[in-house]
Image (cartoon, rainbow, N blue to C red; front, side, top):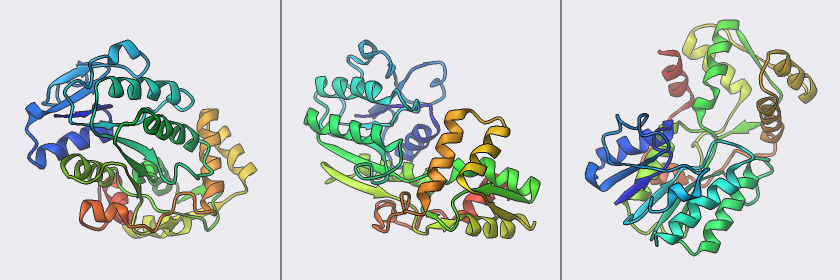
Length: 282
């Protein structure tokens, strides 16, 4: 039996669909959800549990052969939330736990990596056989940028020529399915990133190619970028994250040349242009 946490989220849904395509019977797949109403369309048995409620996780993983532990989305709260999941998995004797971490979690300068590093340490300390799926950025995280750039003819950032190796969310889901349905992945770390790293000028060129409109990238200083995003009304925590990430791109925080992702999924990762076209409907 395979248990998928965060099953109603975008990644969880793609993983469940991928498991079905891989021939895993619905009866052998369990979706762990906070709200069963949101999981009614998943087509697999549901268990209800919340990362915020350790008691609700008791028994959530009973009988599981493998668990995909999708990291929580509430930055700043994830260590305690994740500890509850790890404790429940240990109590259930889960023989294999795959965790969606972040690229180079143990050495990344990104502030958000600290919670992932702490979670990896919790899993190791629990003695649960693990696979760390260290995901780089999802290209879809820039969907709003794609749309705004095409509407306005330009977009802003403060990354200069810094590069990142993003991949489509579907690529990361496919990698998770490969681990969940394969063998020999225990106690293994995969650094998962797109095959081709791109810069914001590259993004402007790709947007121009896909949309047929001339799209320009305006590079700002970090202070100018922060002010512009603040003036646009973005929440302070998101402004800080976006400016920090742009500042770290020059150092290669979101680039990896291991090729782990394309090897796991058995084909090249989704190109930037293809992801743009999917967002823009082209």
